[in-house]
Image (cartoon, rainbow, N blue to C red; front, side, top):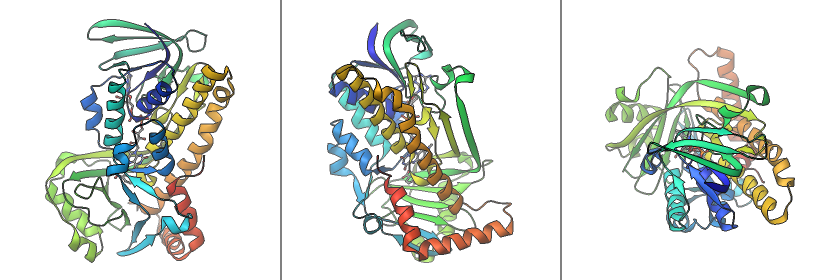
Length: 390
Ligand code: RFL
Ligand code: PHB
């Protein structure tokens, strides 16, 4: 079988790339290890930058996001029981973010792909990539017990942190940078109204908490937990009790609890692989970089990679220019490192460490004090949160 662009992974990055290429008349095929239902079952991101929302519009899949997504003009920082409003709209000259779950983004993209009749092989096992350092990239895999071979012009590795694309690059050609945090986030999804109309990022001596949402009737909450914890050991009652203890009394009173629809623990990691192109193989999204979720940047970075990659490939086919391909890695990484810095900074600011030296704790308290009292510091935070310009 042959295609112009072979995409590995049908997560948000792979699906969005496929849609943008299709709209520009570039032929593409996706190999995905899991079933569609499995991909939709992963509860992940909740916050879209305006530029990500614009790209979904460009791909022709923005209708439901506009109808059901919640536009947020700010969020709250809760520090030692006091809520401080971060007015994104005022601080950034009118910008905002859209609260619309990754599950819904992925569902919209899957439906558009199916409606356009574009090929996706789910259950693709043992994908092997070769020839991307020559002019003839090739992928081999097994689908339903049959061997499938795909020849293509380019391979887009959109297969996440544990994917095969980055692992196919010779170790000498790639440099990786990694920091693993000594805690995780325990997340709970419930059909209860959100405790507040905007997100609340909370720092408390018992640990970080985040009050988020998916809609006006569905809430998403997170608690910082040690990596030794297991989600099975957290009954719903234990989760709600712990969350209440980390909130200020007014917010704790307003919290509406209910049975969980999903509960899971995500480890926190900062990771970057450089470069992001190896001949005719490109990495995009979590395949190339991971941010801790505190800054809500992961899906947004995946979208910005896809924007640069789709432009580069469309330019190649339409204008016979490889300028976008040549600059792909540098363009992405300039944005990636800034988002990595912001996510690392916000994570450090909001998560107490168990064995932290007393001076570090006091310095962090001073930084928070400065942040909530300074328009300049708040502006820097707000401009990063809504997303840096392209
Ligand atoms: P994905 O979503 O991991 O998709 C990769 C796809 O590739 C498939 N795959 C393979 N297919 C074929 N062969 C192989 N060998 C394969 N190996 C893997 C996988 O099955 C999968 O379908 O990566 P992608 O598309 O790059 O998307 C990235 C985002 O998923 C991720 O960055 C965000 O979810 C991060 N994130 C957040 N990002 C935001 O922008 N805003 C947020 O508010 C936000 N909150 C979060 C988050 C991530 C979280 N977790 C659980 C890590 C909150 C959490 C808790
Ligand atoms: C979410 O709703 O899942 C969410 C929101 C904001 C974050 C991280 C996760 O920073």
